[in-house]
Length: 618
Image (tube, rainbow, N blue to C red; front, side):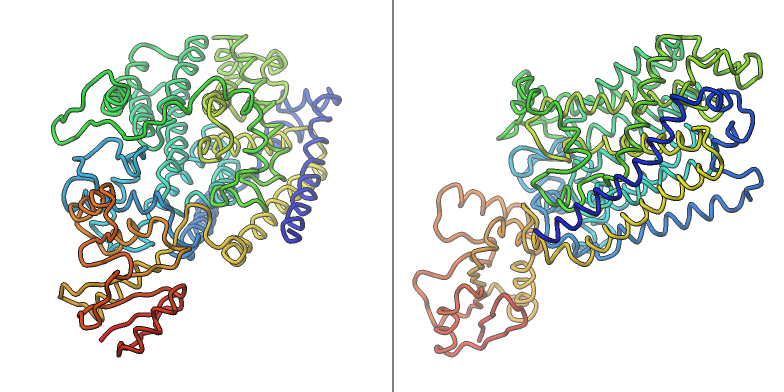
């Protein structure tokens, strides 16, 4: 508790430090009209150049060098200790990977469904994208914790470069564009969620890619980007079932917004809608089957079937009173599941919250001004860039923004996506961070907007750079402190997070098969430690690469209530009638020392290669 309080105090102090330059910048906007006019005009040191992070003589070759350096830090933070941190294996990691393994070998998931669009997993389903990415990974790499988690890292790279693209399209400034990947690299939720194989966390990466392509499409009016955005949004549906609500809400809001701005035509609408609908169709059919509108059926190679536990009932308007202010938890923490959010830090650095808040105000203002101005928002933006309109005429749109650095209608795209995610989040029981994981790309981009406001606030050059240096140093310090805790202290403090289990029982069984039961049907009896019994069966089936049919036979025996369960030649428990002459191997946890002593007395040899288990053989 003392350690946690220390980290909380650190978070509060750094929040206060970053709040100061944010408040100074806001005060300058609200009070100092003269400097604010200079920002809008683009004259003097606080004009467009002053609002840019990139010096006038910035060497072009340095930008890719800086991006590469950030990417190296990013990759190290995602790959270092990937197999062992977080400790153990998440239950969904085990289920997803076993399905991927059986799909690779037999064309069905472990329950026998052929190429499902929504695998059943433990009965309530999981999204398919991670399963199929894992299936591809296992075609090239052997099964291990590294290969199980590698797809999460690969998709995090998509998020990294998408954030760069979003920031560049918003600001057209090379150094501002680097702030996107910087926030993706250092923000706790990005950091933790991209290091283990939870299917729904892929929604964050696919949402970032979709936002980049959609912003690019809106900005360029290029139908090719509208098509790519439709494809990306369609694929996003297969990352998390909640996206089936979030994405349609977002697309409806975007359609209304773009129609108001007269920024979309029928070909562009169809360019997004057609690929989105085509990709979404199989998942839509699966939902109709589960809602009872269609019977179970097979089409081509895919089974459409009812889940044993369809959780549509969790979504309810009755949850709104309890969930309406869940944004506080999304920013500051409070998730009981430590793998989502370490309680010492929360999912989003507290010091970045002031940046997010002023960025949020800027985005809301731009959304309102753009909607009120309608097509005029685009005309004024175009006129400012061409010199047709004087800057003073555009103050209604740019009171807190530098129009020379961003089209005023683009930042609201980020805001509308955040509104879509949050509107679905408040329909759910509180509180689980990964339900809203896509919102962290919104938080990060609005924090970038907060930094832009500091640079464009009309502060003196000295005060502006002092503010920026303070913000960057505090963010860096938070990242270093968080990284030290995550890699060096987390396992000692948390051990196995909730719903993570040990892989040790499966490791011991594979060791026994290699050394004492190689190439034979010799029975292996296991008495697993009480603390490791939960879901030991599926972890064992996964890491021993048990054929799917054998696992299904085990499930049928479990449903019948058989007392002595086994998977192939692996028996869970000590035989009720012990035969000391049986040619078998016994694996005993430290909870079963009395049996270990008995086996030693009857002539069995003992192998102590594993600290938590003893192996008894002849």
